[in-house]
Amino acid sequence: MLPCITACLRLLLNHRRRWPLIVLLISLFFFLSVSGYLEEFLSGILSVFYFTSSRTSSPQVQNIAFPPLLLSPVSACSSPPFLLILVASAPSHRDRRDAIRQTWGSLTSATASASLTLFILAVPKSPEERAALVHEAVTHRDIIQANFTDSYRNLTLKTVTGLTWALQKCKGAQYVLKTDDDVFVNTVYMTQFLRGETGLQYMGQLHWHVTPYRDPENRHYILQELYSGNYLPPYCSGTGYILSYEAANLIMEQLRSGPWPEVEDVYIGILAQAAGIAPRHVAKIAGSLAVPHSTCCYRTMFTSHGMTPKGMQEAWNMLKEAGDHWCPSGVLFYCKLFGQLVEDGGDGVH
Ligand SMILES: *[C@@H]1O[C@H](CO)[C@@H](O)[C@H](O)[C@H]1NC(C)=O
Ligand SMILES: *[C@@H]1O[C@H](CO)[C@@H](O)[C@H](O)[C@H]1NC(C)=O
Image (tube, rainbow, N blue to C red):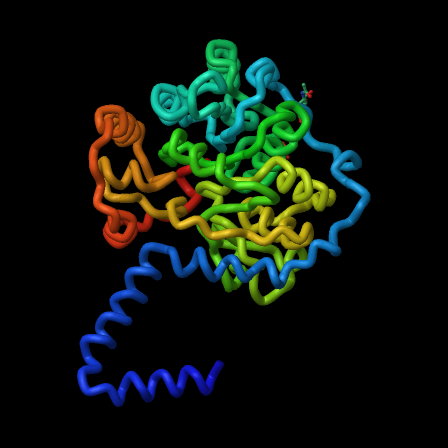
């Protein structure tokens, strides 16, 4: 390998008209890495380092005492969707939930996307908020609620609640997407893509080689006792990751009694590694990125983060009015290059 690289480089540098070639290669590299195709390719190699034999055969989930469910919209899954979307939301985010209900979350099992969108919440502190949430749940029948305090620090519990619910109450769903209430999802395009996939899948915007935050003041702080490694295993951003039903099952089998790391996406990465399921980078899942507010970006990407309710409505209208609107083939590069990095997590679920 190395001799080839040096030989190739020498050949390249000795070439009389080398500059155009070098510029071309650098541009190609830039294009591939910004678009995310390079990372997609590299993440394919990850599975070499994951050993499925480490799976334990005895599921532990049953022995764990989860907070009991207060609201459980089981009838929503009476005809299971192809894609179940679980949105982690906070009690005060009624406007965001309504925006999702009116836009991409309005699609049901009966539509072409065959998706179903449900919200995961816990218990608000004030009695007024509690009553309002019950009222909202009765009206929309799309809220999963478990009996624990709704807070950012309890986010892992929220995800665990949602995934457990999916596995127990929504058997027959092929995929589960975990996302946040400030994320726009191109549901139709995402399910189209998923229909071409098979096997165990854990997909999203990949984070690798991340050092855990050890400062308790940091929102993404991970206690040394809960994860002692210098680097976190590769994991997919919590703004949107997709699990195939079987992958979700195997990952949840790795769950042990708490306390758990409070950063939910990191914890799913840790469990996935224990289950021997390698995460896979999908360039069209935006992660922390807010894509430029344009029809072609909403058409090209599966998700966009940091959306306001108004922005979500606009994006939805843009998609609806787009019809067969033509988008240039390099548009993913444009959307990623000119997208804005929006800080993760905080607003999503506070
Ligand atoms: C929910 O938890 C609270 C306090 O932890 C408890 O008082 C209440 O009985 C629980 N409710 C249900 C329905 O489990
Ligand atoms: C998480 O929920 C539990 C159960 O309701 C509660 O006792 C605890 O205080 C919550 N943690 C935080 C940090 O809010």
